[in-house]
Amino acid sequence: MHAYANPARFLKIARPLTPICLVVGILLILIGSYAGLALTPPDYLQGDSVRILYIHVPAAWLGMGGWTGIAIASIVQLVWRHPLAGVAARAIAVPGALFTAICLVTGSIWGRPTWGTWWEWDGRMTSMLVLLFLYFGYIGLANASDDRTSVSRATAIFGIVGAVNIPIINRSVVWWNSLHQGPSITLRGSTISSEILWPLAPTVIGFSLFFGGIVLMRMRANLAQAKVEARMRRLAAA
Amino acid sequence: MKAKNQRLILALLALAAVIGAGLLAVSGLKQEAAFFYAPGDVAENGLPLGKAVRLGGMVADKSIRHDPDGVTIHFVVEDGKAKVPVTFKGIAPDLFKEKSGVVAEGEFHPDGTFVANNLLAKHDERYMPPELAGKMHKTDTLKP
Image (cartoon, rainbow over all chains, first blue to last red):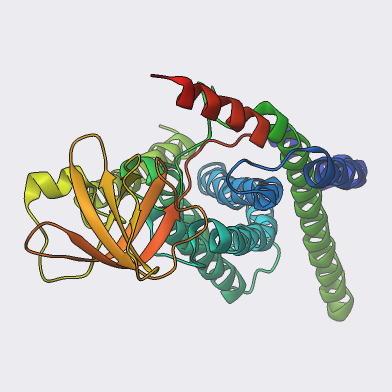
């Protein structure tokens, strides 16, 4: 792991990796979206509103995966003092919050025709809204310190504490009676018919690569900013 | 012990403590965090009278009856353990059907019927194209 502790070495890999993630990601999103909008059949009950699945599921996955990434980076930062861990966590926060918001909005739009309501305070929806607020708190805390490249130790601790919400979101529909349906895709298989399910693979992988590309871009921008500021300080001192 | 290992152990202990606390809180909330009562809960714990609650379950097969006024419907909600008769006056959501999930908001009457002022359809985790569902439906109705 310490082979990549050197920002210069990280940048050497991140520079070519960023456009690959973005281009392949966008391509897969386009393929999945076309298939999901034009090729798949409508659902027998929901009709065409089932198609919101192809964005709602990747958004939910990235909102929760984003915080999992922040929690892992926080542990790496606190334990191994890895210089890039805080940079990664800071870069994940804003896109993670954005995808959480997309998940909530698309779910609400789907809920109106399907359930007959825009919003209900059930376990899944409430815990996902809490995740969005955790992201807001994290971004606020990260920006409260002078360090704009990495994050403070207090922010890293908050990143670990907030991770307790992730299993709660995941299990909320199993533990409690909820309006949101139970998990469709489990280790035992899927209750979504394969004709409707398959475009989900390109959109989930595509949005994940896109997310990764954005995070790499934000990490590089923050590292470059730090470099500029260090050089300015040296010039001012000279 | 190296400082690094000490920090690792501390971080893991903290993580375990936080997750443990979260799980305790969640299991304490088990009843309160439920979005609705199931008919089985009501049969077990008695009627929650005098307060607004939600009742959720499956709409029993062939139980929907329309009153002559055109807006009042009667149906039965079941969960495999118990059944509750429900009355609702208003417009039901499109997905409100027999043998599918429903969440009714309203109040219990002392005689055991539930008077709903709002209905929500609960979608289940199965997604399939109409042709497939149609085939299933046919085999369903062909069954004696």
